[in-house]
Image (cartoon, rainbow, N blue to C red):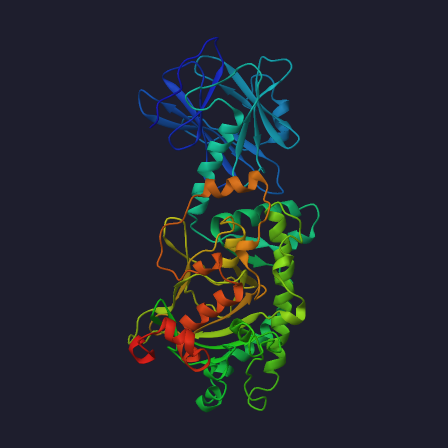
Length: 539
């Protein structure tokens, strides 16, 4: 338990400080007691005022403040042996004399009370006729709760803690962001708020938090019609049930664009086999590569599709789905720019005209582990591009994301949502502000049914050199990166080439490492560079 604040003179001045846990503390001229204002990140709508009996080492919650979105702020004052009743904030001003109301009395008789003003709670001295606030409580400011100290009398800031309001807020911010970066769940954002001009700032604020601290989020009420999603999901089991001969006709090794079918165990992450079977498709595109052009232009080209007679309507369904997610991605990128304090079109320079762009999608099957192989559905890795929109197309868990301290956090399927995550390209152009988060997929357990998923990868121009791009972020936004800290070292696949190579080459290198059979056939020079011992020994 941290020590209480020191006595101050004259009497009844509040002494505010921050303790070793970065919670705000204050004392009222009593070296036997002090108070602590506590808000936990995992319960951001509840603030507690705890009284610490320093001599007897007893902690009592004397007051609680609840601030739920769209609801009126409430407070309750507790007795030593029982919790009090919740009181609406608008009723505080009615409890001037004697009643429990908003009164808050120190051990030496100084009385304070809460009152409301513009949806804030203000702490005032009960004997002050002007009711000038000593501190203000803003229940909806940021993702955590902030006390703002006034320059009026009755307030004294401990010099050894901090000398300015800005430092107090920065200290509180650091604690909240550190807790946020060590997230224990992935946040869920409501995309409908982005079209509500009143609540759009709320969405932008939530998005900023998710981008900086988590790198992953769920997106509900998005713009992709549910019928389009359901139609695609209906095809998926039949796609993998096609005769092996039909699947092999469109195997990825046929395509210099890395599009087509990959059998179980054909892909690698960090040299280890990924136990998944998959089809790679993409938005329509005619390759722009010609002899003498950069080799990475061969990355984009036509998809290979299963025989229409075997899967009638599948190609149309998949292309419709990809087109809808592509448009969602463009809108999301504009909101992302706003979340970082930029103009909504600030990231448009990383795209070419539509005829020069292509975005990719996979349909993936993770078979249940029968005990004969490891549980690596896909190993720890980062995505290379800007954004990934993942449809978890079956109810199986398995996706895990890594928090700042290196812990693996489950991201189970939530019906009606996409899982959105940040790629290394976006992390690079935002100077690490947007956080690309390491993630992996574990195979379904023994006795389970297969897990299906459909990731969509929002690409940027193949020619974009990210090191040449400088975005002018506001200072207050850049500070958030320092508050978050750096992630623990991971064994995930990285994309360090972004600092010197065009985006297309970086992506090509990543595909070569993951699909050596394609590289051996279509990119022999790169294959020799990254697999000098040949494919057989690599396996």
